[in-house]
Length: 219
Image (cartoon, rainbow, N blue to C red; front, side, top):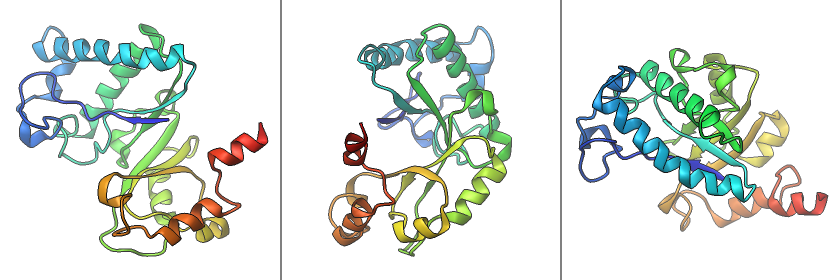
């Protein structure tokens, strides 16, 4: 199970206030002791921790991807730069592992900028989101090489969000080690505007692709 956290700004904001344009919330002030922003940050983390604890009690591991796409400025956590998002991620990691003991979380980092990487001690999976302007048959190999160059070679790598499916035949040839991919919602996975039924069937039918059915057969 993967969970991506679109965090509505802890203070103020309107509409979908995870977007920076919909809030004046200053993420950098979370890093200052005693601020209202820091208090609100921890308040929200406690509430979300209660939901994550339900998965722990059910013994369900979760690929947890907070502060995603911090290489851009469209979300409030990335609006003050990737270094700020990195520090917020580290605060959450320490709070959730040491205080809430959420030991069922696999921590997915999602920023392709070197200055944003929090370090191997805080990360289980490195990832990137890719939306091509138009379809091209690809294994996203160049994106993989750029990702590990900016983060680490020591962690599992994933396509956390894509518009177009990677081509499974190319993956089988190149062995680009993407552990998993997630096609984004709505038009990306409903209908055939982006991915055809034939492409999807080819991916799932391939012996190179691991599906839940394959896992069940191996149990």
